[in-house]
Length: 297
Ligand code: GDP
Picture: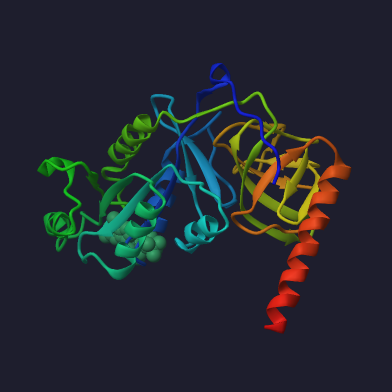
């Protein structure tokens, strides 16, 4: 394990919440993430998000920011959790109002509960004539998830991801939940965070999207992630613009690792390359021994 310094409470500043959208297939997860991506001012400056890097950051009209994980399926959420990464502060569970609570809805709720992550329900497709949001709220109540408008403790919002109805209100409710968590980080230290996705790119070599959870990640930093390491040659945001650094709750696409770490691998910034290489190769050897042992069984 890598020794970590505790942050002095005086160094901690508020950070944006990191949000995952989960739900049954076809209930509108992609539509909601697309709507948010396309209608919200991107942190920093105007301009659309031009590439999928697995996470993006939006800024609401009041200046507040939210980071959304934009990974396919909630398999990513479970895979990341299995690897020890806790990358979600608030979970949006999306349920189609013209359908019902489905097996994957229950699964998504259970994942969020197991992770101890607060839930906000998004009852989607209310633009459809056959939509019945009250039926969904009744079903939730039967499962002991009483929504706030009925006197319960769970935030819920009727939305149409397709038409953009209720989406701003949904984000306000997400921020309300996030406020209770008093999320903080120390931007003035070496970065630590999680790998969201990675791949081998023809022109650019190994690329990885990482989410900074504490500290500030900078170009030139030496990063250790899983069994790989490297010096960051270049960093990009979700608008495909070069950036020099990424602070707490910000995603960044990084170039310079010597391999593709797995989603959920934790990354650390190391003081020197020798140390990073030593830990990476020790981990690789352990993995190799592990797989030989498994083969023998
Ligand atoms: P996912 O599988 O959860 O990512 O669901 P998608 O976002 O791909 O949506 C599944 C289908 O439902 C698509 O045909 C969408 O156009 C449609 N859909 C999603 N949201 C809405 C909505 O608010 N209203 C209507 N009428 N259709 C929607």
